Length: 183
Image (tube, rainbow, N blue to C red):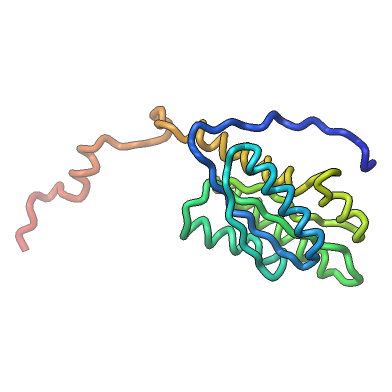
């Protein structure tokens, strides 16, 4: 893909209540990570949101940190950032595939995550993708997380009776058919 190719971007979502995202970054390539973070922070601020930032050792730890935060904190969504550059071994495939799969699995469970972990062949590709004045993949990952938060808030209202819900009386009476316990 050419660096100057343009793509359609959805309009920035608007929120009636504050949005707080956690940015989880693996700063293995610090200069690239710093650009990704700058892009993400700018996008979150432009949407009127706030963010916290944590650093983890590598791309494989990004999903774990997000899973911990999802269980123990109250963030609306998450931005996963980092960079994996192909080396001479198959470790590249392991890191790319496993970090992406873990993020995707959490997303399928309803966690709002924007994946901005770059997986590139060389440093030059990473620099172009992380540049806030260029492809701004950090900003794009934040935008993805914001859009998912907006969808979750839109769909997270009152349920419309979808799915099976037994009547309350059936729940109370379950297991009490033999009468009072006389033991």
